[in-house]
Length: 322
Figure 1: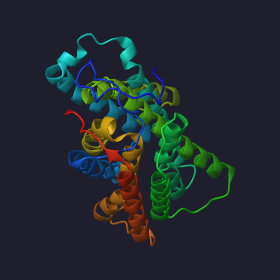
Figure 2 (figure 1 turned 135 degrees about the horizontal axis):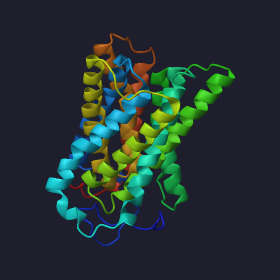
Figure 3 (figure 1 turned 45 degrees about the vertical axis):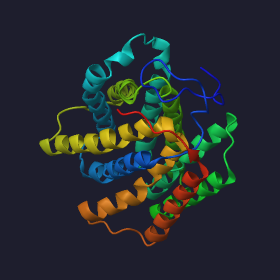
């Protein structure tokens, strides 16, 4: 693997790539098309939490099916529209995609159990620290981030904590849950950083198929070990899982992976932060759950923080189509 601080190739349209220019972990200012795609992605992932709350089956089963179905649905795109990208492809070029899938599976395996061990508010606040970990990894690798980026990150994460309405529960179980939620955030950062590496050489469909398949395989093994069934659900649960797959996996994760190579993992992580206020609005409509008192100032802080980071980035070419 190349040095993280080394410049990447341009976003892949096949196996061949252009000359290096900047690090794939740097912060870039998104163009208009990137902003539009991230907006659709944020709307998609905002449905994830409220829809998941309506499903009566295991979180692990939901995570498995959304990744497995996502890989299957994207496979025809890869084979029919992007087949040329497979020519000359070497196994070592898929390593970053496999690593991203392992990190994504670890994210689900760590974060989902934390929801039942600590408060949902604390778990949500801790798991939304993902962009801080991507920024720290980029800085350690040699990428210099403007001071405005750090201020924006801090403000956005603080806003997410306000929205979550963090309450502290002092117990060993809650402490372990907090640790798992934080581990989930770090694993999510690893997923984005490895994805940025993979997207140097691979198209979105090729990367997503390998990543989602790896994640689904690991989650299936985990479900087998802990005895969680992956079938036998009610028709209502199957329809909800299908909706989660379309909204959160295809419109959410896949569109974010599409812009990952052009805006960088830190900006994508910040975009995911917008899921927090987005999920509040969706929950208000679908579940009639009133937002917490600090939701409005929290939303403002998240939006301002994201804007600060985006303004600090430099313009970058737009990503390739799926």
